[in-house]
Each structure stands twice: as C-alpha cells, then as structure tokens.
Length: 240
Ligand SMILES: Nc1ncnc2c1ncn2[C@@H]1O[C@H](COP(=O)(O)OP(=O)(O)OP(=O)(O)O)[C@@H](O)[C@H]1O
Ligand SMILES: [Mg+2]
Image (cartoon, rainbow, N blue to C red):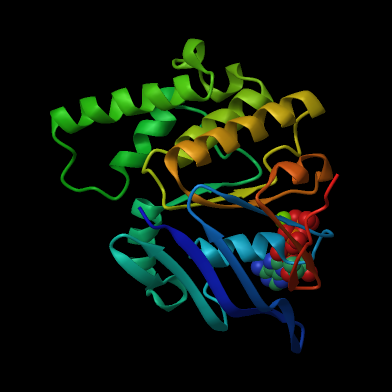
C-alpha cells in the first residue's frame, strides 16, 4: 500500500487588522505511510495552522496538499467543503490537543459515533455490530480494556488522550494529524503515549504529522521539522 502526504509551497494568511498575517509561508514537507514527521517550533509559529490545512479544516491561500493512496492522489487544498468533509470522515484521523470527548458518551460510544457521523439512513445492525467490535478492539489496543464503559469524567487525562487517539483510528486513516499529544501529561505518561502512537502508526501505516513542544520525544520520530514564523525547515538528524 502506497501512502504519502506532500505539501507543495503551502501559504496561509489570516486577516489581521488592515493587513494579513502570514501563518504558513511556502511550506514543503513530505511524510510517507507508517512514519511520523514531527513538527516543533515556538508558540505562534504556525504548527496548528499547518495541521488544520493538511486535515482540510482550513483552505490555504495557495499551494497544494497532496494525499497519495492506492486509489490515487488528491489535492486536499483543492476540495470544496462537502468533498473535504467526506475525505476527513474516510481518510483522515485528527487528534486535537484537548481530547474533545463528548461528556455524555462512554469510551466505546465515543469511537462508535465516528462510524455513524453523516450517515443517513442509519447503519444496518450488522454494520453496527462490526463498528462496536472495532471500537472495542481499538480501545484494547490503546490499553483501555477495563475502561470501555467509562465516561470522560471517570478517566484520567492520559486515559482520555488514549480514547482520543483510538477514536482517530476508527476509519483506518491514511493521514493522521496529532497536535501536542503529551502536553497535558507527565514525562512517563507522555512517553507511553508516544510509544502507543509509534506502534499504531507502524501497524496501520498512516502517514503521520505530530506537533510537539516536547524535545524529549524528537529522537524517536522518523523526521523532524522546525517551524519558525510560518516557515518550515527540515532538521538534520542528530547522531548520538
Ligand atoms: N483563526 C485565526 N485568525 C487569525 N490569526 C490566527 C488564527 N489562528 C491562529 N492565528 C495566528 O496565526 C499564528 C500561528 O498560530 P498557530 O495556532 O498555528 O501557532 P502554533 O505554532 O500552533 O502555536 P502554539 O504552539 O502556541 O499552539 C499566530 O500568530 C496566531 O495568533
Ligand atoms: Mg498550536
């Protein structure tokens, strides 16, 4: 299976008073399936904006965001709203910094909801059973076997982050984008989340973009980019 994400001179500006603020300045990056590209850099440098663009949540001013899969290559920057929503649902897993879980749903329901989104009529019973067993399998894979029926308020921060990651994997995403997965966690739990992400990415083959402030985990990433004032640079590998 061929999977790759390539951005080609992506530029994004936001309105800023009378002018425009350049959040992304001709960004080029490349990440292949089964690997993680980390994006690091100072606060306000454009990291989350980059994730929003590659996950189709924001359309850039110019440039291309090419997602290559076995079914061909799509320019995500060229999709209309409806097409973008469909691609997000079927191809892209998004993990925001805050877990954004629904307080009224149990862990397993948070995952199941992903398969029911935007579907009318409702899924037939057989598919709903399949969805449930997939949700259970993913929760087991992230180490939450004993927590399937818990609500977010009954989970720790690290456990919520794991539900968040499992949920992003429900549609077997070609592209996985993850914003600051360890920032709310202590060093040990942060390292465990990175272990988990690495193992699911290797296993499932998603091309993954991971934003982190935490330099402790960078040596474990396949490539490291640094963002400064909207410009992205590939960091040379540090050989220890
Ligand atoms: N919706 C928006 N409208 C206008 N300006 C924005 C918007 N979102 C972000 N910005 C600005 O764009 C720049 C990049 O923001 P972004 O959130 O991408 O940074 P970041 O690198 O993720 O920062 P952090 O590490 O603090 O999360 C910042 O100057 C920010 O103030
Ligand atoms: Mg950010």
